[in-house]
Image (cartoon, rainbow, N blue to C red; front, side):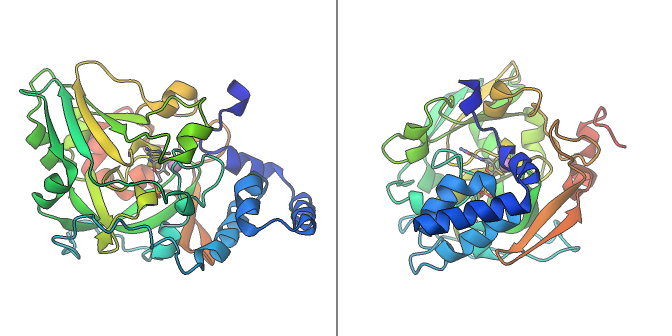
Length: 343
Ligand SMILES: Nc1nc2c(c(=O)[nH]1)N[C@H]1C(S)=C(S)[C@@H](COP(=O)(O)O)O[C@H]1N2
Ligand SMILES: [Mo]
């Protein structure tokens, strides 16, 4: 079974080990077979370099019902577009193009082998969703996510976003501080950790049905001090509109100082615990995906360097930039991690 588990990053490894000419000849071969572009992306993406795959995505993103056509009609729009919180600035680079941010994704519930998953979200219907709040709380409860979102003061945060696979974006998220939701949950003094569980539906999400070797539903967790940090955010929208389905509608956790996989998409349950919960990627490959997973250029992934990243400005424009400690959020989060290797 282990050989069919594809943790995030295998693609990066393959791209480094697949020579340019080998890739070119494979592509010619596919063209000769006359396969459509979606098939090429879905079935052969592992053989391409990241930049090549981004270029492949462009052609599909050009479709009229493209990646922004997946914003749910019945998502809450109150407060959108929201005012940007100017405390959090990303001065050194531009905002990523929104088509790129919504057509180059990781969401294994839809497909684990391709980034181009937005066109697989047709059956997924994020609203209504009921959020379950469980565990070490004064009282367990459930709340309709639409009502929850509408009851929160929505703000915009421009954040860096970096995947463990060494690609990155700059995204204007809208939503509310995770701390506001934690306070609403009324955890007891015994709560040391917060666990997030994602929506997982075989009928609506093809990757859940097709990849039974993963331990669905997706589950992630934070220490309570991390979840209460002012930078931790619950995104309900991006680029001034509700979240497209592929970006984690109805709501998803955003932790810009941690690798992307720490932020669960399509959250439907929050559980407070005394003990450190297990997490999805750590369970599959503990030596590659630690519980903390703070962004740190000094700590290489066992199979590649984390010193730099491919910044996706748009699908046509990708450039390599250095990765910085805590992704530039050390001012807010650094004191939580005295043991994080600083050099
Ligand atoms: N439920 C769920 N959440 C998830 C993932 C996933 O596969 N399923 N992928 C993670 C990873 S690896 C990344 S990089 C980000 C990608 O978010 P984006 O596609 O909106 O950029 O979502 C994270 N959250
Ligand atoms: Mo990721």
